[in-house]
Amino acid sequence: MAPTKAQTINVDIYRELRRIADYLARLRDEIGALQPAQLHQVHLPVAGKELAAVVQATEVATNGIMEHAETVISAEIRDLAAYKAFVNARMLGMMEACSFQDLTGQRIARVREALKHIEQRIARFAAAIRPADADESGSTAVEPKPEVNKKRLSQAEIDQLLG
Image 1 (spheres, helix red, strand yellow):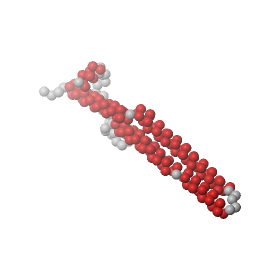
Image 2: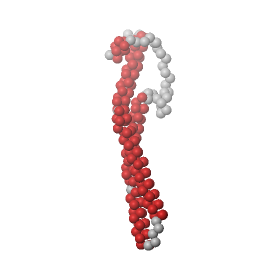
Image 3: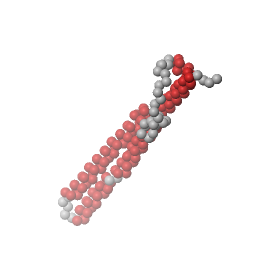
Image 4: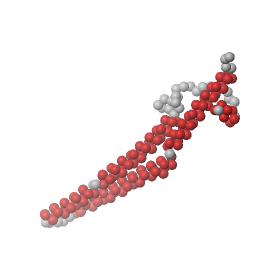
């Protein structure tokens, strides 16, 4: 016995609701995997603190280098040996101040890792919410199906369909 049109429609509705339920379950899992509290409470604050430390280290180093350079420029030492020792000491101070680059490089690497982590999670979330039949731009090539029945199902009917 061939299924009636109503039975076919019910099966189609059931399949579509099953797809929606599966999609929502995947979406829920992806949102859970995002761990928005962790992103907000850990990764972003760490990145902000690291960048603030980079700014501070750069400022301290720059000020130190400028102070040493100004001291050398304004020095009025007549004895060549004393002047050479004076300049050597200031140049050593400038070189020490330049060591900030290594520390700031490490801090910037940590910020990059935090941002990469956030980017990966957002990309996974975006992929999860893109419909399966969407192209790279997110648009769907398939035309939407016309509604078969505009009757709204009750929660009990939906529960029964999803069984």
